[in-house]
Image 1: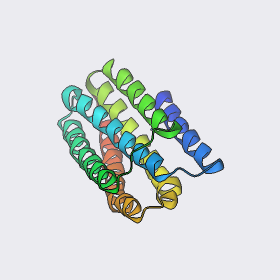
Image 2: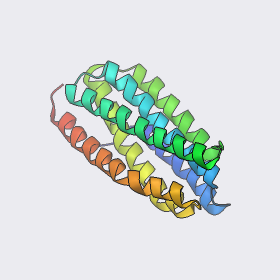
Image 3: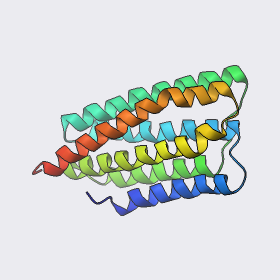
Image 4: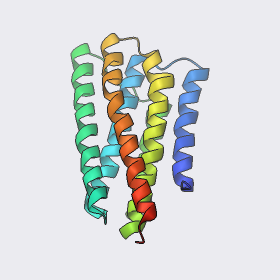
Length: 178
């Protein structure tokens, strides 16, 4: 299925922001913490919108799963950085994530029915793949604090499961007649 232009743009924006970290200095633990929190919040916000707007019960259930799981990760991350006395530090990547998330919600708000469901799920597929790439290539390798690194390693399988679930939904929505 062809990804919509804004989903590709979001993926490119995140990749470029992470690439700037990779080419320049590696992100610090406070920057990584901000990226993790921003990435989860973006999916929580999109999930809340989908929970209220989705046409398909399966999409609504998936949205609730995103809200629950990503809220749990943010709670764990917040507890960890509070305990470690690390203040998350906004950076180009976390700012890009926030902007991309707001742009996605604005776009989705204008859609309805099956069109909304497909756009939401397509974004979830691209978004989870991009976040997994960021975890594997930038965030986990550059985390200096072992507890922060361990948290990202621990939650990574959930992101993989979310990606697979979103791909299954995408295939189902692609087959539906509306």
